Length: 420
Length: 84
Image 1 (cartoon, each protein chain N blue to C red):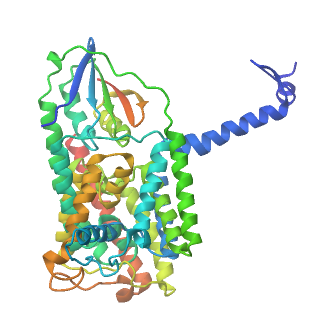
Image 2: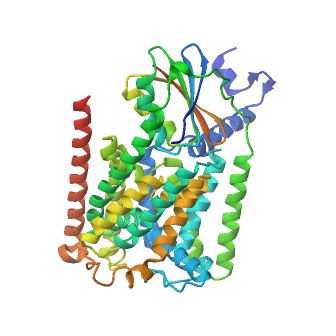
Image 3: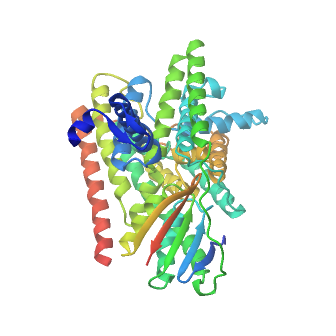
């Protein structure tokens, strides 16, 4: 029989003769599983996909309500906890006043991120309660605490203060990169030294013989992930029914960010840390591309009169110092503000402790400093490149910064290759 | 200091258990580990940090060694087989 004819009519398989339609459906099923399950949930996304998705998600969320940033609302959570225990303190960021968390639309972005990461981690069978020893927890607490101080001094965090601020044409964005870069280097070297000490204590020649760890059976995690997804939709629907459609949208946007971060492993802490520690700028280069795309989107929106001073932050020496403190904190805690939220939802106890440390230090800022973030002797004034150099000029300056940063990273990578 | 759990599986075949070490510890540890490993050896590195499944092979290949397998062995756990 002609093989072409065979494929068009009936296919002989191990289960017998299969009608054409059935074969087509099998192919459709295979294709759907491959694209919508294997590529999305089982394989890590390529970095470029994560970078592009992140940029467009941030542009769309900004057009909807606001840009991504997670720490100011976490600082509010910290102040909220102090008040529960009878310590009267205002939340440090004026735009994030003390509010019950379920009514605070900014907090819903964070909850959305936790939801999104949990959905993603469970469906891809990557969720695990990951414990550490007491030293690890203390380091996480210190790292989180440093991030908490860094976020109120800089302000705010890595993703809000560098990523979103740069694309929003705030001068503070590029300046914060200086502090973050140096801080992440200090923190990264501390981790590298710890890893080396642990390896130094090893001797391959005197190891006991043992049984290798075996592969375990398939788990119920994908099913749990889908259940969490259904819960997210139900919660969003509930908010819509209560007339809170904007918070509902932000919850879903947060979940989208959570999925993007979890699947692409686009870690900002790692991007800053690895530039000097490993002379590897791969991650940061993709983040720079993401910022470039975001800059175009934000500039278009702002030039049309939309939220022109949004994410334009105070700028001064505090931007660099705060960035430095935040940089050390994010490196030793194992993630920036988004990073520790994301890893909390993946089951890292160390990240939970870092979140607590970050909340409690930033939440106490008014008790320590005596004023709100952005006010008083410590802070400079917000500086919008768009307002000072025109929207086109401001965007051109950001592109110049991105190009210079790219060249610096490439130069550092080249010095490593030369050394080798 | 936290210890890295390591066993000998067979002749020139070791298992280095870095589950419980968050990223970037496995990435930072793999370079000195490979330096300590004798030639023609195999090291199975167990990790529970998803990023390590990308970071560790990149470092290993940059050192001129081979990554013959990266496979999931449980929920949130992977084995990276490194051949020197």
